[in-house]
Structure formats: C-alpha cells, structure tokens
Image (cartoon, rainbow over the protein chains, first blue to last red):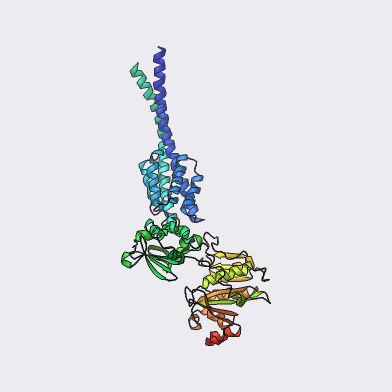
Length: 174
Length: 331
C-alpha cells in the first residue's frame, strides 16, 4: 500500500515538475525577449548619443544584462569582433546566434528577428543604424507581447496539465 | 614614434594577404615607407622617399604583373577594421574622405558617394585606400625657430609656411608647435601655451581625441574641429599664446585670425602652393597677405628632401614677395 502511494507521489511529482518546466520556458522566453529589447535600446543609445564603436558598445550592453545567456550573447559577439579573424559585425552576430541558440528559450521566429538586426550592423551611417536597431526592437516588442499573452494562458494550462496528467497515469496504473 | 611603429598600428587592420606581403618587406623599404596604396583590382603600391614599389606576396615585386592585386571586398574589410566595424562611429570623418588611425597615421578613401541635399552623406563601395604613414621628425624645425621666435620680445611672429604638397609643411608645423610649447631653459626660451586646431587630425595625429604625436607639454589640441570655430573656442577657453592651424584660407578663417590677434595670440599656419600666383586663388589667405598680416613667410620644398627651407621672408620682404615674388630679400 505504502509502495503504491509512494509510486503515485513520484509520478505526480514528475508530471508537476514537467508542467513547471514548460512554464519556466514560457517565462524564460518572455524575459529573454525583454532583455534583448532592452539591449537593442541600449545599443541604439550607444550608437546615437556617444557613437561608441561596436566592440565597446556591445561590451557595455552585456554588462547591463541580467540574464546570463543574453549577457553571454553580447560578450561573445564582442570577443569575435576583437579577434584577428573578424570579417564584419553582422557575421560575428550570426555566428554567435548559431552557437548560443540552444542555450536560450527563443523560438525560430525570434531568432529570425535577431538575425535581421545583424544585417548591415556596423556597416551603416548613424541614422540608418538607429533606424535598423529601432525596427528590430519594435519587432521584438511584438514578439514579447505575444509571448506575454502566451505565458499568461499557458501557465495555467501547463500547471493543470502537469497535475492532471500525473493523476491520469496514477489512476491508469492503479 | 619608432621607425617601424606603423607596423604595430596599421598591419593588424589589414587583410591577411596584405599583412603577409608587408611583413616580407625589406627593412629599408619598411623604414622609409610613406604611403600604402590599395586599389580594387590594381597592384599593391608602396611609396617611399626613394620612389614607388610594387608589393608582391613575398616583399617587393619587380613588376605590376607580379604584384599582389586587391579585391573590393578586401578594401571594404580594411574600412571596417579601421572603423572597429562601426562606420557610424566615424561617419563625420568618412564624409571628409579620411580616417585618423592609431599612432597618428591616416587613411584616405575613395569610392561611391551618397549625397543628401547636395552634400556627401556617406562614402560606400570603397575602391581605393591610401594609408599615409605619420613620421614625426623631432628637431625638423630647429633651423626655422630663430626666424619665427623673437628672443628680445619673447614672442612668436605671425607665420605662414608655404610649399607644394608633401614638402614637409605639416611636419614643420608640428615641430614648431612642440619646440615653442616645450621651450628651452638652456637657451632662455620659455615654454608657451600653444593651441592647435587640427581639423583633419594631421598635426597632432589624434586618435580618439588623444594626440599620438608629440606636440609639446603646453599644447592643447582641438581635434576634428573646423578651423575658424576651433580658433575662437581655443581663444575663449584656453588662452593660447600661439595658435596653430593647417591650411587657413576661407573667409571665416580670416575673421577668426583677426579675433586671435586682438587677444595677443600669434598665428602659425600653412598653405599649399609655391608662389603668390597660386596663393592668390584663396581669397582669405590673399586678404591676410595683402594686409601684411604675416610677419614671416617660409617657403619649403623637397629639393634636399621634405622640409627643405627655400626662403624665409621677413617684415617688408613679405609684402615685396607677395607683390613681386622678389627672392633677393631672403631673411
């Protein structure tokens, strides 16, 4: 009897954990999208107000990021630009995106927006560069708004789904 | 600056093929290098005091056919490396067609211009890069100093240095600024407050606002600033005793010079040209010469190498030179 109860508890805990992990992914994506938005705004300020060159601007942006994975992204682009083999900033950005894709919770559509932000990065005049960063930030804002709505509805769903799936499995096994 | 200091500052900014080619240069060519000319689809050219050389993958090439040919993509890569992959950060300089580099060197660019309201907005599709190696020759102006500085009155004469391009005007101007700024206690020559308006970053070779070349311990440099505006700013804020600027000649420069004179500052400047007939084409400069503003005119040439002093006109001789180009009044 005790063994069955213990098994049921284990199954229930596992499915609740699974539900919570899915919730964490939804929240993580939203947080990372907001961090990237903030990063693009900070980068635009560095470009627009102080015309700081990209390696230093990206490093400063990285220092102000709270999420470790987003911070790593900007530091990695900086390191690539400081390396002897750097071709251009866009390439460094895209290579970093390829390497760090699995460490972030972003979707393919989010990455598409970030990849578009890389086109012409550092190769444009100040006004055009600002317009491009602003356009990417606006697109990320749309994605963030959608992610927030998805997180609000998804959280409840995953929480119930975790508990109910666990209970269903327990009932089936009993 | 070290004789081969350019290699430390410039080589890392170049694509790998060019880096290898320059590393293989004979020491005498590397030592005397004045310009590195990169053109899309054309051979890599090196200019030294002894003439022009083609550069191949393994040092100096015997002919254009053996020389390294560059691609437009490589030139674009050079531009990006020189701007730290940030064209927006240097777009004001690029609009004027050049970039200041670390070590006081400069790179000039040619390509397709993008215009806005009839003015250059951006330079793109770069097809040529000219890297000019800065060489500071300390002591270059020692010979000139007694003509420019009055020991009795302890003041500097308003001076114009005249020469054709690449005859050492800027080198001479820089060294004069350094000598006047540092002074010489043994000679009883006190140091003076010198203000340099370095519109094209050529005199002090500023990189990120910091002079890369020695322009003296009492020298304030206003980098990348239009001359007339810069002179007024320096007068108001730094109270210089000597104002140094390259290539005065626009009407607004004249007004700034006149303002400088009322504060007691002496002006040292340069002009491209060999004789008055060439200088008269610049209305501002012609006005200053016509009104006997300059107390000294120094004519330089490359006859015995850059910085050869051909003539120094003093006082009344300046007026005569301007009117008649009479060389018998050499000071």
